[in-house]
Length: 259
Ligand SMILES: O=C(CO)COP(=O)(O)O
Image (cartoon, rainbow, N blue to C red; front, top):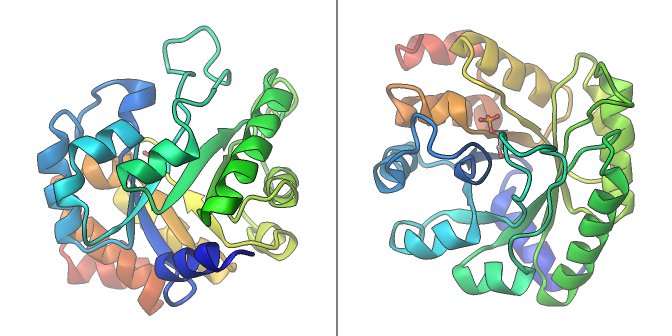
């Protein structure tokens, strides 16, 4: 691995773990609640001092003045939207070089194993890995198994996709949580972070992250359950204590008066 990648991965996973706040939803969902005004959302999220945020390159450029003290992941695909005919047809919206020009410290692309577009998506990952290598930029693969092949998801299915992503050169895998998650972390030779989901009771989200970390996950990438909460900064602080301090979800719910 290049020194650049090594340095950047260590900056993200300082103690081996990280919380990435995902704020890239606009490119797929449009202006959903919580991200209508990105500057104020970013300010609230950053008050909690997360390890990283994730945005599209164009949004990094627009809001760069707020981003000098946080690791920035660029989401560099996004042609598959929630209203497009096939959201798994998710192609690049930026080169790695343009993401770096914008201020990115790492890049991320989506993979939907089992979908009709699977081959195109794996090729996208391989090409991004190739472009990122000489720039020393880590690549995160977001692996979300989908029909028609995967109509349900368990740890073996998640491990299948996560392992292929690592074999193709992903430096970090972001994927869905499944029970027995240690099956995924043991079979994937790179850090694995769990992704969030649509808004759910906070105790469920925090307990999922607690379980994932206990099963060897290197942290989490959470969006809506942070920025759609009335106090994003307190949710970030609670997640940081679970991820870095080994706190339980019950402890942090009480400590930060969260519900
Ligand atoms: O990483 C994510 C989107 O890029 C996760 O976001 P959610 O937590 O809102 O599902």
